[in-house]
Figure 1 (tube, rainbow, N blue to C red):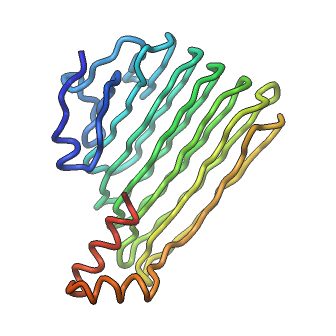
Figure 2 (figure 1 turned 30 degrees about the horizontal axis):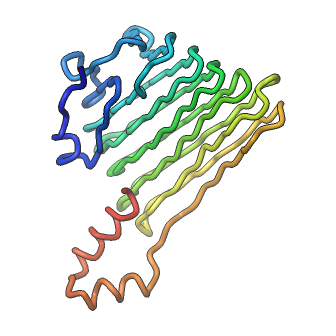
Length: 234
């Protein structure tokens, strides 16, 4: 059975699909919205463990408002697993998000996106660890950093020995107000020859051509800023 979660598309712009689901809202695991057979959530360790190869993808959905220290640990132990993560949040209080992904499932792929609207202070640390060959860990983070905020993004992709032919990407993109403070620290440790290994960090700024195009479409300054932000985040 797959739960109908059309409200996630309407409210959070998250498109659901046939999958096993693990849903978190405002930092709390929602058992009533989750439907899974081949994954396990261990609450005292904030751990999602995939120990059986699922017939459907596993969709991790993390939405709402965050504050304080948040840990999410993901361990992929089953072969041929497909895990997708949508992390769309807002923080109005200082928040520290630590996400750890360990992939020891041969031919298994983790594909995640983290999107946040930072109104205060946000620190994110992403660690992706490839433990066997032919694994994928792809995590892209996008943050809209508002006036007088601090955004500190760090990440590390680790391709361990005997994890050859892996596909690894931990990347950060920020659209920031001129008064915002931004720290970007992507790193890699490669101990086996990968299929692909990349990381990047970039600040996004709209071009004059983009702004002028929207202005000639009849949009005011506030509307232009909203359109550009949503296009960047989504």
